[in-house]
Image (cartoon, rainbow, N blue to C red; front, side, top):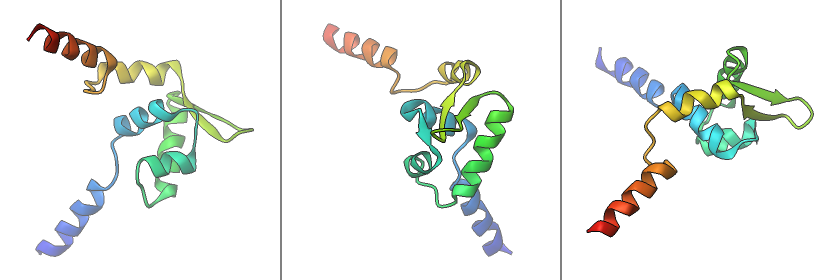
Length: 102
């Protein structure tokens, strides 16, 4: 009945979306798997590792073998600006200009 369904929903909610992972990566890149995992507050580092492998296959990020750090590619960076982000510097600037007029 109800309990397994609620438990399953809870499991799904704990994982960030692909876009959330890319945005977090952009903020702290270059970054190791461990540090990105900490930033996202994930318990399952293997899950994140699989997501990053998928992004590499899609040419959204690269992994430097020597330092084991991940960075976004131009393609990966190109996806992020089209996502509304309220901490965006342009939005902050527009808001501060608006406040000054008041």
